[in-house]
Length: 312
Figure 1 (cartoon, one colour):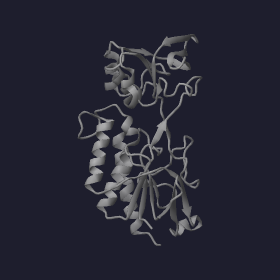
Figure 2 (cartoon, rainbow, N blue to C red):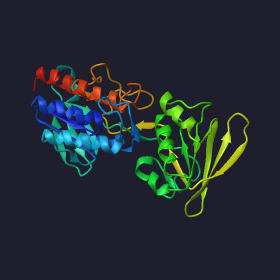
Figure 3 (cartoon, rainbow, N blue to C red):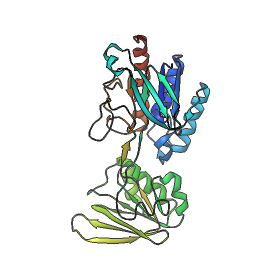
Figure 4 (cartoon, rainbow, N blue to C red):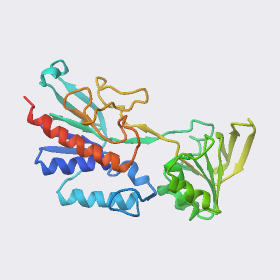
């Protein structure tokens, strides 16, 4: 039996594993990949110690740090988490079962769930049909494919602003569509976007349809104020409208909010003793790499405290 299993290996999970290693815990970290949504981040200028980096470079540093502690991520998908002997949880007699997609099971005294979140879909006509044919949810991954083409980024938060700024250096023209009446990301990013001659900002824009033949060739949107329908010619569309927490396989006994984010206290504890959560999968506001890292540290230290009191 493990002392701890960490599920998810982005910022929160990686740093939690380092703290677990430093405390000599018998632990395992399982994740379908290393880096998660951090990998899709464009310019990063607000992570302490890195005045300027990007998602790919930062994740490479995560990997180097893990390697220095001889931590190996078991790269596969977790299908389900179960509480064993749930009826005894008040007496701390329960443990947890982690079931992977290939149906291997691991038992552990504690869990840190740090699976992050995945991109939200627009759910409009043409979105599914043209995914991978001009539509992407990862500008860092696919942006270079649209060199010298006209692109549109949908979403005026930080990820959308980063997308537009990245495409400024790749595309011939960039449209930035925001549903609200103003951009809502960091002031520094907003100023950069507004300063660009290549980026055209369109606010109050509700995307209604994505059109094309074999590939995307246009985008339709409705002006929320005037109710007018408009269409712009584009060859690439980057969708950055928010994230959905990857919490679907958490035990049903673990409490979530209306957005399916896992509810935790200031010590990263859930309502189930021994079950901790950290990062974007939780209901903690402000989805930032630095905040996720801090939560991962908190969760790991809370696990140590819990294990010191654990009675098998």
